[in-house]
Amino acid sequence: MGRGRVQLKRIENKLSRQVTFSKRRTGLLKKAHEISVLCDADIALIVFSPRGKLFEYSTHSRSMEAILERYEQYSYEEKLLTKSEVEAQGFCEEGRWNLESSKLRSKIEVLEKNIRNYVGEGLEPLNFRELQSIEQQLETALKRVRTRKNQVMHESFLELHNKERALQEQNTALSKKLKENEMNDKQQNTQAHAISKVMMPPWLLRHMNE
Image (cartoon, rainbow, N blue to C red):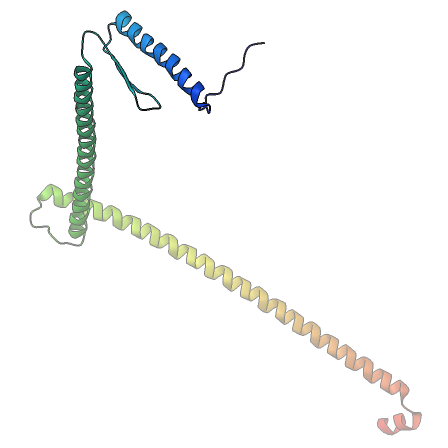
C-alpha cells in the first residue's frame, strides 16, 4: 500500500521546528541555485527564520539589489499596462454607448419628423418625390384604417345580432313558461271546482243550480 499524503501544519515543538527549518532552508537554497545554473534564470530568494534571521540567495551574475530593482520596474510597468487596458476598455465602452445613443437620437428625430409630416406640418422643404411618398404612405394607412373599421363594424353587428337572438329566445321561453303556468292554474281551478261540487250536500247543489 502506498503512503498517504502527509498533512502540512505548523510544528508545535520549537526545537523540531528549528531543525526542520534549517534542513528545508538548505534544500530550498540548493534548488534555487540549481534552477539558476541549469536554466540561466535570475533568481532572488529571501527567507526569514522564525527568530527573524535573514537568509538570502541571488544569482551570481546579478546582485540581489539588481534583481529586486528589476522586479519593481516590472511591477510598475505591469500596473501601468493594466491601468491602460482598463482605461482603453472604458473608452471603448463609452464610445460604443455614445454611438448607440447617437443612433437612437437619429431614429427618434426621423420618427418625429414623419409624424409632423403626416399631420401636414413641415412640408415646405420637401420636394415632389418626398411629398408623393408621404401621400402614398397616408393612403396605405387610410386603407388599413378603413379595413379595420369595417372589420370592427362587422364584428359589432354580429355581436348585436347574437344578443338580439338570445333575447328573443329568452322571451319565447318566458312566454311559453307563462302559458304553461296559466294552463296549470286553470286545470287546478277546474279540479278544485269539481271536487267542491262532489263534496257539497245535494240540497246546496240544487240551490246553486236554481
